[in-house]
Amino acid sequence: MEKKISVEAVVTSFNQGIMLLEAVESLYEQTLKPERIIIVDDGSTDEKSLEILKKIETTPHSPVPLSLLRQPNGGVSCARNTGIRHTQTDLVLVLDGDDRLAPSFIREAGELLYEDPALTAASSWMQTFGVLDSIVRPQGGGVCGFLSHNCCPATHMFRRTAWERCGGYDETMRSGFEDWDFFLSMLEAVPDSRIGIVEKPLIHYRTAPASSNIRSMSKRLDLMGCLIEKHKALYREHIAEAVLGVEAISMSRLYGWENEIVHTLETHGTLHPASEAFLESPAYGDGGMAAAVRVRSSCK
Image (cartoon, rainbow, N blue to C red; front, side, top):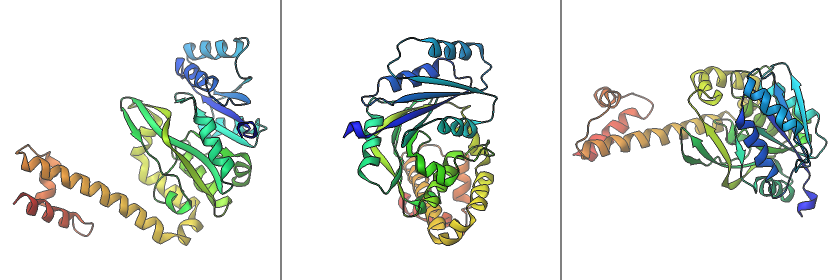
């Protein structure tokens, strides 16, 4: 079956230095190798990054054919679209230049897509490293799940036809959430499709305080507003699923905070001032007052 899985990899790069070499080497080490690696450098200016790019480009006898495309800085969406336009395979893998893949990622994600025609894309759980050492378990799924939050990592494999049908990544989205928008666009363009997830941490995801993912959180409400406006018909059709999905996330976080407060009080610890303020004046209408009552009842 492996011979039937045909994929090219697009790696985006912007001043990522040695991290880019690690990303490319993780593709070289795949048990099912891509037919070609396309690196799109999005206007790197860092001297070390330029040296790494030159080294990768001039290394003889690489395990996988490799192409390097250079362009003025246009953002990650523009870089991905540029690389994808140069692919010729049915499946495409996009990989950020500061992340790495476990050796079986292409084989296992490719098998999901090969075995289930209803899947428009596939990815996996993530092993984070750097600031945070954890396993993150995105769930994938259909369009309704993606209305309340993003359910798929930025690194993923997808059917090139789906990219064509949805128009690709939105190159005007340079502040974040471009991946979430792309998944919504694909699922909207291919009715009844889903995104599959390999339930293993096959993506090694680098975490840092200054990463674009962390910075985008300060603009989360504005970015979500843009998504809703762009996909207005989709949200209008599935308004109940969208609202209930957000509420489910809110309740989960509230219960977690509630349990932490109870544990702190029972062990005679010191509450954070925000938790003390919450108990003194709980929120109303969003489950806050009920949570405060449960906390006091548990402690008594």
